[in-house]
Length: 229
Image (tube, rainbow, N blue to C red; front, side, top):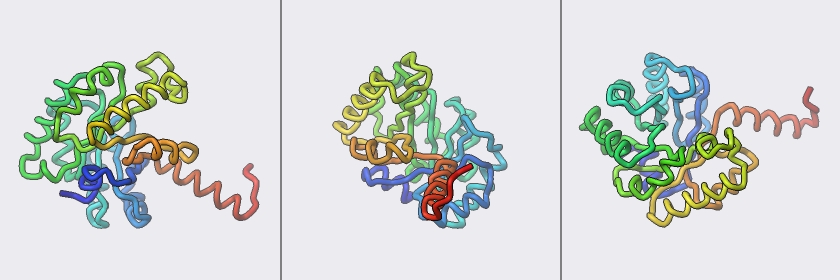
């Protein structure tokens, strides 16, 4: 079992950083900063299959788990990404428990020998998924329930505004249900809300390397008393 999967299972606080750029060198750099896992976003990002293989090799060389968010949950999509040497998979666009069960079965089929060492994260990002949450939680192979706040807010009719009070209340209820089941919650976090989501019970803290860079740049300017242009 890889270290990231174990942390998810134990509900230990851990970081998952979206590399944002198809760059093995950036993966190497991130690995040296002590992040718990890196994610290659093949749903909303632009990595090719070759990029995924090369970035996975870089991650493996520096002993940081590599996770891929796939574009969709078709069996052939799952198999093609799982066979690129990754350590975990984020499955988006799941609205029913039956779809989740099918995705888990397809991951197991694609990697029968490595399945127990592969981190499996599913996204909760639609009104339908929230309604089916109890069914999602009944599937034991899932290591983390990753709340897609932006898409959930779109599904609720709020055009991506996950700061809307109604959306926040819905997310709070989802978190409470997952925690009551003794399972791991993952959330997108930014500098201004990281502590808030962590305090609510999210232990898989997901962010973008672009936000890391921006935060570091602001701190550097503050320390040097340099005003941004």
